[in-house]
Length: 393
Image 1: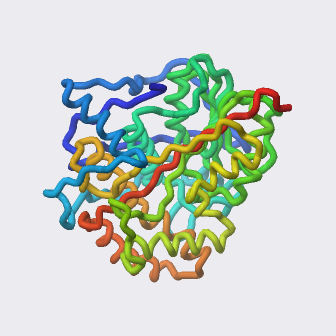
Image 2: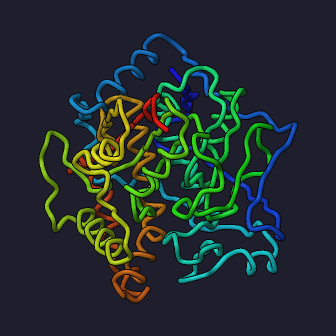
């Protein structure tokens, strides 16, 4: 495996607390972080208490992959009170720098660079949610990436790096590589491996690096932001070296029922994502790009070869019987609930013209709907990989 996680030893009833810190240079449009020493972090190696635990992890991956079947825990399909999150946040920057580098709207903090380009907040609560996303995907997939990049990649680019947690772990794992994470927000930590840097930039603008430069380009959870996927894929192809790889890890956020059933359109969760899609569409974002193999098709049309797509089922809630998938489902539902306001405010106020009060009133029923384990809902996670031809320019 290319990378993996140390699974939590705590009960799956409570996700572990996650934290992130931010640091940036007030005087530059882009910011880099580089330190020779840093506090210890997880190395990514899996440890097991016994063989039964290891077997359950393997079964989790097999059940979650498309074509597999997640075994339902018949004792856990009722409405679930779930995990109550603390929505409070603490300021981590001075007032002056916050005003200069961030924008505020509807009580949430947003990026200032290319203001309005990304429709979701970047405050402390949202950063914790982003780190929980990383923990969930790593627990489900049991590795950091799927593209066969070899043991000694040289140049890695992480698009929409967010808190930088994936880039940092890749830097730890591949010490031969220079790992660059780019994002519109300067929210990455200042304690990073010496081969990891971060830069504030807009990936849909012209790139600064030369063509044929990167060995591997990675993007995850960016479907809510990208307006022109074919253009981004063409630009990535230009900047990959011949034989280099791109990998997209994207959740298709429209819920599916376990066993192939459909979620009724009047279900609160289905209504919520239909409205998010409407708002993002009005804002020019192709939120449905992950569905029906479209990303893989776009890769092929752009000229990538060896294109592959792997799909994992991400349960919403604690209805799976498998221990790992039950925890993954708890994490994912918590991520969705903690982000329910952050996800909705931009698309519904900016894209649909709603008032904030109307958004908050609507979210009351959506929160209740998320706790309905009997619906056996999941969302597909698409892992799409493509290679630049060896004979390319």
